[in-house]
Image (cartoon, rainbow, N blue to C red; front, side, top):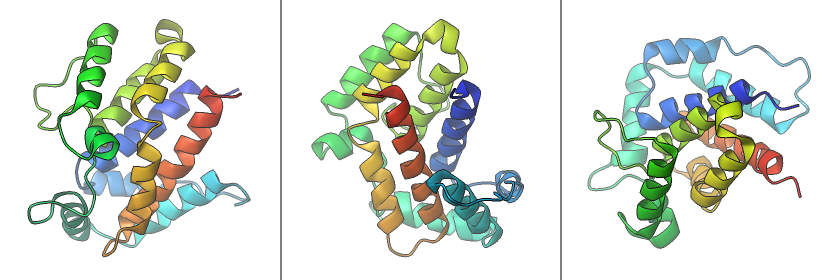
Length: 191
């Protein structure tokens, strides 16, 4: 049986890592990832990669890496928006569909959120919310939201992250995201 709260926690971690450069407290939490006695699964290896990446960096380096990867001069190496990955431009039909689906779910954009709702961090945060209330939200709603708004592009985003030049820490984030989404896809779409 899949633990919905564990799924929510992984989504929340990914959201925090994608929303901005990790703070020292988050780095400290990554350092507490338990060693896996048997590293025979991709997920266990991805967790250990996150722990190691967190131990080998500091807040200042992460700030530089985050800005090179996502912000840059004019544009970073990656554009973390669903509309961009799906259509090649911002503020397109995928964002309009997402906003409609969020309204139906009663989920509103936070007033302090400068990014649009199709930002990778916002989508991970939304999935964390949906997973946190499995009885109220239901697996079918989670499956539909995942299929409609994450499945078509977010795995490519995490794969691109693993291949981005001039980064270290976010390669581990890309691996964790890629591995987790494969498990999520298998769980939500078993056949």
